Length: 96
Image (tube, rainbow, N blue to C red; front, side, top):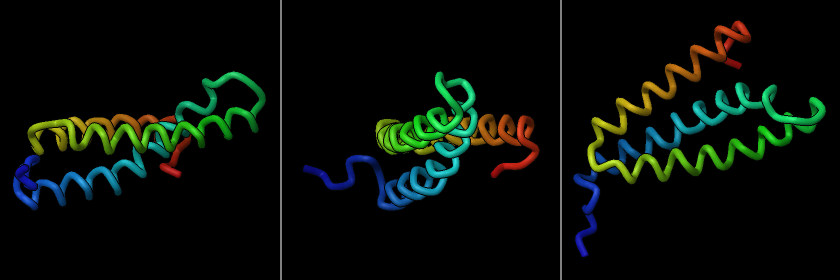
């Protein structure tokens, strides 16, 4: 079996870096946006959103390594980060 099935070692490192760092910010921002939409009291909404962070983070890792092209993944993922980050900033006035 070819250990470089996803491409060159740089591609694997870039996907890993994008999924790790970008996945952190993307999942946190998505949880911030999802929390008010979830049913229940405020503390229940926050706890459910925190649980969803792990699922979103896992999905980002899966997404990073299922795309055949690094360019395609990085473009799609950058779009995801821009949309979630801009929406959080527009609603809350900051990214935190």
